[in-house]
Amino acid sequence: MIIESNSNPFIKQVKKLKEKKYRKSEQKYLIEGIQLCMEFMAYTPHLAWAVIATQSKAYLTEKFENVYIVSDAVFSALSDTTAPQGLMIVGKIPHENIDFTGMQRVVYLDNVADPGNVGTIIRTADGFGAEAVILSPNCADLYNSKTVRSTMGSMFHIPV
Image (tube, rainbow, N blue to C red):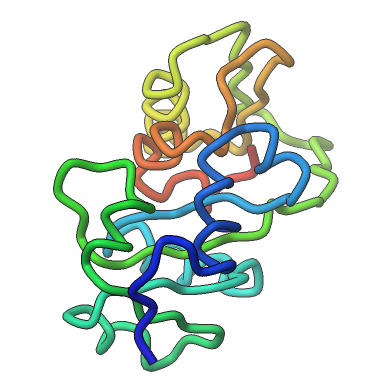
């Protein structure tokens, strides 16, 4: 069955995750784009809550559970990008304590306000072999869609 209505209860629930207060209360966030979704599934598949795909990208969901196929119009309404790729995952926000014992290369971000910059710094830290990244309380939201996209999957490789 294909979801073709933006008023579908599941779609309404997912749309709310565009807002920080709902991401925080629901403890879920959106991962969008083919490459980013594949990185998520390669490193943190246990955190997948649902997979959303258009009909043309349904073939990419064969190994996934909780798959929802939606019309292009519905996917566009969920997407934050100008050219949606037709694949999105609703991920659960991890609740793991990071043990920094013995870590020597930890990056601390102090009040970085721009989500794109936070994501880019996380990606760069990963590329340079950092063992973890810490965000100060006033940094941009790690689970903001722009931050997630800017990490290009690095947030799934190293503890943040």
